[in-house]
Image (cartoon, rainbow, N blue to C red; front, top):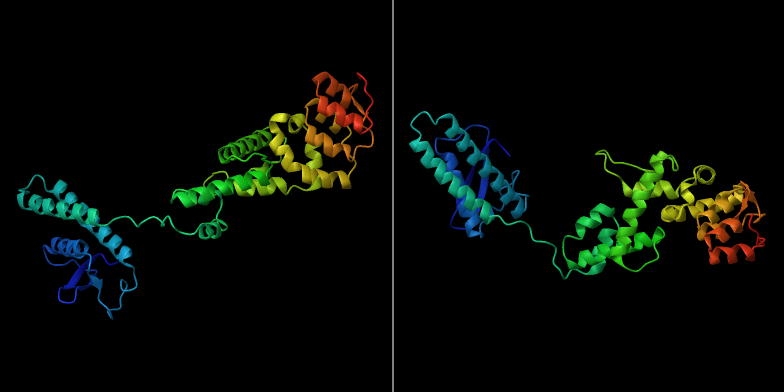
Length: 321
């Protein structure tokens, strides 16, 4: 778009086209341009002149209207700036023209309506295809379009949560589960339980949830084994969601490396039944003691009947130590 432009209107066939110019037009041309834009917008039936090829001929009606809106704003701001500079002189003529320009500018702004939202009857399969190419934040924005999109976004959130250990059926609970999951990941990264790469950020410093989850579940068996050899926070029930995500990689680790000797004892001490079930498939000695206590001793102390039964079924001796 040039610094200046003029609108040529043909009232006979209801067409118009735009002439760009780098040079200022004659005095008063800005007001005339505004009036012509108002005519085109108010009538609504004017079309861009067929066969007149230029930078504007390929633009949609909405794109042309947005250009009008921008040009109207530039003209209005230009006259407002002039008023502020010339207020000490006799500003009556300038003020009068600025008043007319302000009125037309407001009219133009009111004539240009925002593009309509996607129609509510769009097939949900269309939304599903769209959502398949979006990340979580984009799906969230799609949910603002209409009811169909909102329902789809909720379903996608539920599906994602289930892929990452959620066992409920409520979309609100799924959203809360994912929020807690990322909060826990942050805590475990900050206290050095998880490697730093489990928290990815975009160029603006915002947490990239998709990449963070991908890095977490993509940890190598050796990296996961190291996590369970380190701080005990990963065994705690409050971090159960993160622990669940690591179980598949831990399973591979247990096949490739000897089990962490104290893992079963620690899992029992924190009532982590899911982890205990996995460890018992690879733990050759369910009666191993860590600091003088066995897994079943912790289960007895915690009065965890499910854990006690699980350990006994795998050969643990019912003892207090």
